Image (cartoon, rainbow, N blue to C red; front, side, top):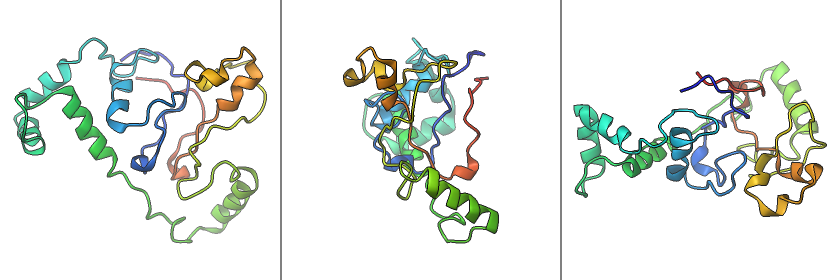
Length: 193
């Protein structure tokens, strides 16, 4: 890991098994098992710092008798008990269990100040942040580019956004909100430790 600053907040994992898009700026990431490699092996930002070390994670897990036994039980077929593909599949299975549907909001039990906040949310945010997970899984243009902190969003992976016009590219630059919002940190640069 490094002290490198990430360009965006980390998306939440609550209800991630229902999502059709898994990263803010790369629409190609639609599989939880494939997305696992982004923080593990990615280089911008460096999160786990494992690039070039594909075999190291399985090797470390094989050394732990408990993990070795659990992988054999979870993946009974195959010559090699632990591979990175199996690690990714196990992490994706775990992520699918992170379900948030039992909050005061879900039961209509909001305190008075929370109800006032929800009314404000409905007035200013719900056009894009709708449905049970407060997302339509779409990208929306919210306005002009912030020249103090330019960010091309998904334009590097979306050919229809690569038109050379910064304002037009920003139409892709909003990631859907995750629930429960009360457990999110404010939007600001996320410092990796």
